[in-house]
Each structure stands twice: as structure tokens, then as C-alpha cells.
Length: 205
Image (tube, rainbow, N blue to C red):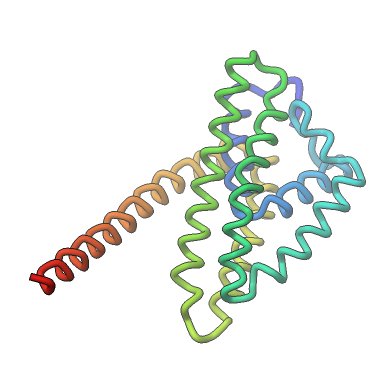
């Protein structure tokens, strides 16, 4: 991909896909981008080329290795994901900002907000899935789910850099579905809490 010839629509698709991958596992995404750029497999747009720095690759690789194990421990993975709310979303926003450095300030701000929003959707969906799976008595579910998330983050990063439009459309469609699912889930929780609250009030009468 030629960083100088990338069109706005292609850049938008790329940012959508990479932001979703970062929302799942930002360290795997950064490390994968850095390695691909370092090996000259791809040309990163804008100022993302800095990810090819050996120090960036090394640090992100070490952090990815730490997350690979920490994210598979039932219970601790919920704490880990909660803390990474303050890492994955801002990191995705910074990546979107760097990728759109050749755009006007207004366009760059829009792309940055879009990157943060998509990462938030991916991160929220991942956290919701963990909340649903963690209570299971066996650790296999957590391990399988975490491994799948790692694989998706790495695979999606690769696909995004080679087929950005395809990846962007797929992730955009998936994001809409995930937002609808999260909204439905929260609506069910609110309805259950209202029933519980009303039932408790009636028992006091």
C-alpha cells in the first residue's frame, strides 16, 4: 500500500479495521504493524511508520506476551480488561491520528474520534463476553475466547493492511451488530433490575 496514494475512503476503512483490532488487543496490533513495516511487507500511512522502530516492536511484543497469559486467567481477566479501557481506546485514537497526519486538522479530528469509537465498541464487546464467560467453573472457555481474540486482532491487522476496504466494510457491519447486541443486553439488565426493585418495594408494603 502506497502511503502517498491512499484515498480517504481507503484510509477510513483502514482506520476502522485497525481500531477494532486495537480494541481487542492493542499490543498485538501494534507489534504486528511494526513487524510488517520493518520487513517491508507494507507501507504504513501517515506517521504510523514510527511503529517500525525496533524499540516499539520489542516493547509491544513483551506487553503482548504478558497480556497473552494475563488475559486467560478467569477473574483476573476482568480486572485486566477494565484497566485496559484506559489504554486500548486512547491508543487506537493515537493510531488513527497518526495514520491521518496528511489530512486537514478537521478531518484528522474526525478520523481520530472514529478510531476511538470503533475501539470502544470492540473493547466493550470483549468485556461483555468475558463477564458472560468468566463465571463458568472451567477455565477452558476463557482460554479459547482469549486465544480467538488474539488471533482476530493479528489476522484483522494483516487483512486491513492488504485489503483495507474489505476489512473496513466487514468490521463496520460487525460493529453495528455489536452495538445493537450491547444495547439489547443492557436493556434486559435494566428491565431485570426494575422488576427486582419493584418486587422488593412490594414486599415492604
